[in-house]
Amino acid sequence: HHTIEVEDLYFTYPDGREALRGVNLTVPPGVKMTLVGPNGAGKSTLMLHLNGILRGEGRVRVAGMEMNEENLPRIRAAVGMVFQNPDDQLFSLTVFDDVAFGPLHMGLPEADVLLRVETALRAVGMSEYRNRVSHHLSMGEKKRIAIATVLSMHPEILVLDEPSAGLDPRARRMLINLLKGLDMTMLISSHDMPLVAELAEQTAIMDNGQVVACGPTAQLLADH
Ligand code: ADP
Ligand code: ADP
Image (cartoon, rainbow, N blue to C red; front, side, top):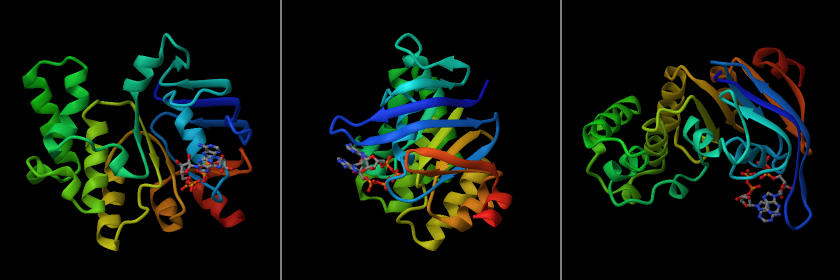
């Protein structure tokens, strides 16, 4: 069920900008797929449809659920969204509070929340940071905490918008290793071609509001 399926998806912003013009895309279960293409191609807009932040015309099915009002809460829980700017995602005082926020609002007992926070922080290699002030961290640290805030919700699918943007080489390397170690269905937008080549078994190319090619990364990079 851990699949992303998008069929004939159209979306126009309120100002009339046609950002998606019939997107078709399938990310099979357990596959890490990167989404590449020029600025303005529609990558961010597409990703915002995968947990219902934006709702266009067409079909979006994620984690076995049809995108609709009824399924929206379960879809939000199943699809972890990591925004390009971690400041959009970290709004508590401490790292602990940021990572605990999701599980707390799921109504989990305190012991379960604690366990989830510990496990998520360990997964991103940030256990020592639990009492630090989130907004004082470096960009690379913030990105890993942003990923932990999503992992603590136990999502089935991870969607990441340009995860390596703005990172220094060491932070970038840690992030790539972290994502490589997570065995989940992922859709990752990126302009970082070495990351794409290393991380993703499949790649989709977007241009002008459509997915214009999709397939094994090595083959696509060779052809384009
Ligand atoms: P990226 O190319 O890195 O995905 P953009 O530079 O296209 O991001 O956009 C950065 C932010 O500005 C996003 O939040 C996007 O929604 C917003 N944005 C982009 N284009 C427009 C526009 N024409 N009108 C209003 N907001 C826009
Ligand atoms: P990408 O992520 O590939 O850079 P985006 O999804 O950010 O592309 O943008 C797709 C198109 O939609 C672009 O033409 C962009 O300017 C426009 N756009 C993005 N966000 C907004 C917005 N909030 N309002 C109006 N137009 C937008």
